[in-house]
Length: 557
Image (cartoon, rainbow, N blue to C red; front, side):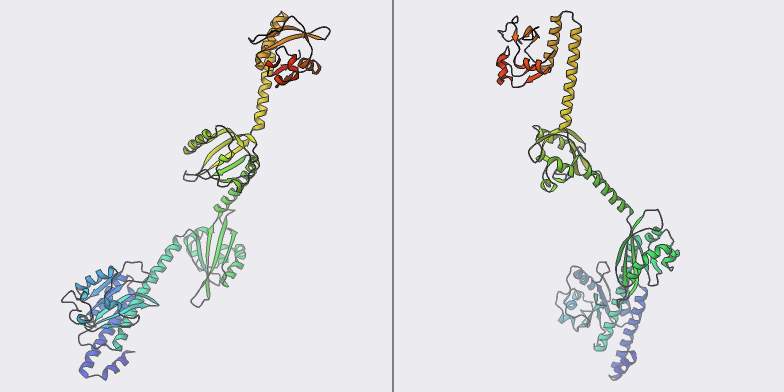
C-alpha cells in the first residue's frame, strides 16, 4: 500500500487517534527510508543492524528495537544489536548465544508478525527481558517479532517495542515486514558481495589459468595465472578477441571446442601450447556459464600446464620398461617386507607369478641354511637406509635350488622417508661353476709347474719321482699312493715308491704289480682316470690297499 492509501485509511478513524496514528506511520516510513539508504552504503553486517536499530528508534517510530543475526552465510559469529532495551538485552543475548531462545522468539511462523501485548503476563517469569525494572517488556509495552528473510534465507529476527496505546493492525504488520525485508535484503547483499569476493580471491590466487570468453569469442576476464601462461598483460587481453590474443593458427585449433562449449557442452582436451617453450602440454577444460534462464552467456576456460606431469609419466613408463625388460629379477616390498611387485625376470627366475607371491615375504624363496641370520642383517641394514649385498641359496617353485647374488635397497620419497624396499636377484649358479672350474685349472697348472720344477731340480730319478709324487698328492689331497714304471715287456708295473700315509701296509715294494684295474684303463686311455666310489668298485681288489681307499685316481706319465 502506498502512502496515499495509508493516509486515506487513517482518515476514517477518530481525528485525534488518526492524527497520532498518521504521525506514527510517517515516523516508521521515515525509518524505512533511512534503512533503505543504509543498506546501499553499509557493507558490515554488525554496523548495519546497529544503524537499523538506531533508525527504528531515533525517529520515534518505536520505543525500542533489537536485532539478532544468526543465519545466512556471513561466516561470522552470531551478531546482535539493540536500542532502548537497556541492560536486560545482555541477558537475552547470553541466552541466545547458549542456544536458548525466549518463547516470544519461537512462537511465530515465518513471514508473520508475532505480537505480545503484555509481556508481564504473557511471557514466562524467567524471561531475561523481564529482569530489569526499566525494560520495555517490564513496562507492558507491546512487543512485535518478525523474521529477517530474503530470497528464501532466514538471517535472524527483529523485535520492536510499539509506542504506548498503539493498536497493531495489518498496516502496522505490513510496515514491519517491509522494514525487516529491507534489512534482510541488505544482509543478503553483504553475503553475496563477500561470497563474490572470496570467489575472486580463489580465482586470482589459483595456479590454474582461468578466463571468461563471451559468445563473440571476446575475453571478459582472465586471472593472473592465465596472463602468465600466455605472457600477456591484463589490458592487452580483456576486451580483445581470442584470435587476436592467441594467434589465428591456435584459435582455429580450439575454435570448434569453444563453439561446442558455447552451445552448452562441457569440453575437455589436451593440446600443445602455441607460445612459450616448445614441447609444453596443456590440459584445457571449457565449461558453459548460464544465466538464471539457463542461457549460455560465456565459456569458462580453465587450463593447467601438465608438461611436468607428462614428462614424469613418460619417465615412469621408461623406467617401468627398464625394470620389466632387465634380465635381473626385481622384487619390491612395502615397509613391512610384504611383496608388492616382481618383474617378468623374477617370475622366470623363481617360477612364481606376481599374483601368487603378492602379499607374501621374500622368505618363501629362501633355501640357505643361514637364511635367518642373513635376513636379520638385511633388516638392520634397511633400518639404517643402507644397501645390503650378498649371495645365498634360493629355491624355485619346483623345489630346485640355485645360487643367487642379490642386492636390497630402500626406496625413499622426496622427503627422504623410506616408502618401500627393492631387491635385485641374479642366478649365479653357472658363474660359480665356471669359477670353480677356473680355480681348479689354476691349481692344476700350478701343480704341474711345481712338479716340473721339482723334476728339473733333481738329477736322481727316484728323488725326482718322489718330488713329482708329493706335488700330485698334495694337489689332490691324497694321503696314500704309489708310483710305478711299466716294465719293458708292458705286462707289469715296477713299483718305485709307496706312500701309506702312516697306515700299515703289506705291499712288497720290490715285487712287480700286474697291470689291471685303473692302471690298465690309464694305459689304454692315456689320461687320468678316477673313481669316487672306489671302495665298492671291482677294481678295489687290484689295489695295494684294497677297500681302504674311498677315492682313487691314476695318472699316466
